[in-house]
Length: 79
Image 1 (cartoon, rainbow, N blue to C red):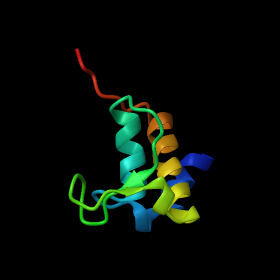
Image 2 (image 1 turned 135 degrees about the horizontal axis):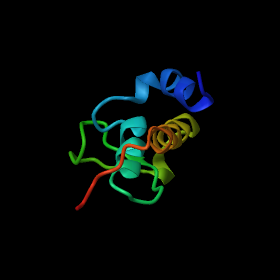
Image 3 (image 1 turned 135 degrees about the vertical axis):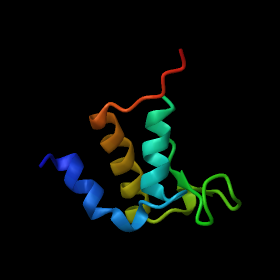
Image 4 (image 1 turned 180 degrees about the horizontal axis):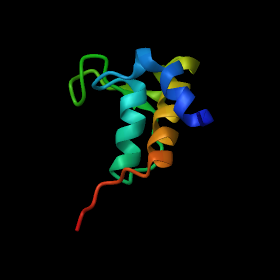
């Protein structure tokens, strides 16, 4: 198992709709840059928690989600 895949398991508690891992994976999927954030009440539902208000573990979960999706190669086809 790759390091990135094991990170998905490590941060499973942050892998919910709107969570840090989920948002990292979504940013990668939609070809967006890395911008740690999450939505505790679900994607696009206020409040939006920015990096400045995230814990170190939440930020790590965001980056793990981004890296996981990059490794999987799952990208939005805008064509």
